[in-house]
Length: 503
Image: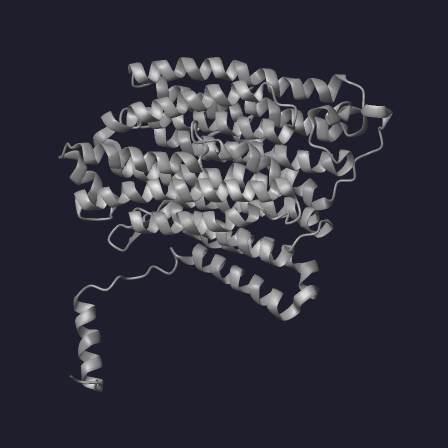
């Protein structure tokens, strides 16, 4: 046996590799991910080299790095080549994926703004926090472009593992430890179910590419295919906290640091929906007879259970957790008519963007108010208008948007979902539209209860001293309220940026 290779051997091997069709990398298309990798390395290096001296600048480095990763997203959006594929179609960069990457990056930037003072003023490890946060966002951007089971799973774990750690970031707090453990254990369980479904799909189709799997299962009919599709949907249903896979969300949201809660409720949940978009719209459409009933049940249960339990909450973070479960039901609704309504994909993406703006804004107000009240109880919000009128107006705008009141963004998000449900004229669509309308009315009760407490009740103990809001929180609230209003008044800004599946 030869133990060495000559120069001629290496040259011949390289030549053979080129003829065998080595993948060609589009560095421009990969630029957002490359920049995010560089940001993670920079954050770790700053922590190792500067030690304690890195604390005052680490959040700024994370924020600037995220904004830097947004630059190649914008250059790709304005380039002539609006659709790029790599690895045989396993990694796609088009208008839709660019919008989703921008959603994740901007959401991450807002979370950095929410975290700056929260982490600096608490007993937290800061450098590791931001490195894990950016790592999770990197996984989300990869997820947006993934059209292959392997890359989807790698992206899912890359975004999930840092999130498990962040959920338990308050080391000495029992609730935070419980939040991290519950999130981790439920996540591992869901990952096992997801992997089993993926392995069945690979065994049936002989490929991990979503397009190839979709083509293979559309011409076959077996219990194994049905089981595989259901397991994959269930695995992602955990990530989006859909009922009955929602039990981790309220305790995790309450126990985690509030900026992490905002991150899990918006960015992490959106990534789960993007994964579901990839498998449903680009793989399962040929077998909608299997996934449609499952998604109908998940959507209807999530809307109804989430809203009914939210009615009884006295803690605003837990209320937003159950509200998020109900909102997940709204976002799941267009999936039910994915094979009949061309506008279903656009409805989902538009809802994700608007949901991110109004929900992150609501959490920004929660963090700001808690700086004065040191409580997340709804009663502590009494009389907020007396000492923070501007913040009261902003929070009212976010609540009105969550209800779906024009001209704020939430109305257009719900209108798009309703239009997608009704346009095909199917029984599934009509039935879910009725459930959605009823649950919109139910949700109005607990959102308006917070508005009533803020506007019409007296402040506890007559304390009307102003809330000291740091600039970072003001900027975060400003970004969110501008987006919420802008997308409601000019909704075409979003619809023109999306591409219908297959378009």
